[in-house]
Length: 121
Image 1 (spheres, helix red, strand yellow):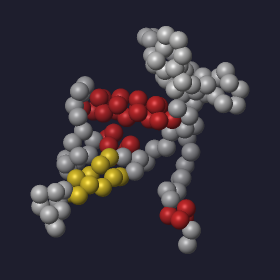
Image 2 (tube, one colour; image 1 turned 90 degrees about the horizontal axis):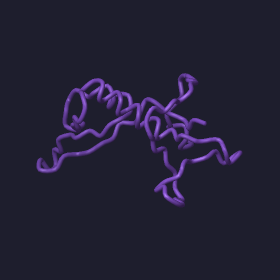
Image 3 (cartoon, helix red, strand yellow; image 1 turned 135 degrees about the vertical axis):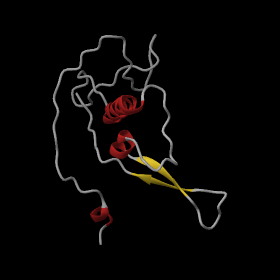
Image 4 (cartoon, helix red, strand yellow; image 1 turned 45 degrees about the vertical axis):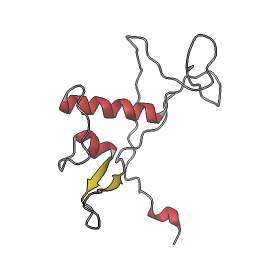
C-alpha cells in the first residue's frame, strides 16, 4: 500500500477572506536582508509584488491568541498536563508519557494539528 494513503484526510475546506489592517509596526519577515531591515517582507513568487503572509505565521498567531484567550498572557504549555488546552487540542502538541522500561525517562510523542493553514496573499 502506498505511503500517502496513511496521511491525514481532508474532510472539509473553509476559506476565510479578509483585509489585514495593521495598527502598529509589524514584522512579517522573509530572508535575504538588505539595507536597514533585518528581514524584508516576503512576496509572491508568481508576480513578485504581492505581499505574502505564510501559513505558519498565521497559524502561530492564531495558536498564541487562543492560548492567551484561554489561559492569560505568559502561561507556558505543560506537556505533562492530562487536560490539554484548546490551542494544544486544535494545533497539536507534545505528550509526555511514563516509560515502563525506564521510569527516569519519559516517552515523548507528538499529536498533529487538526488545522491546516495555507499562505495568504
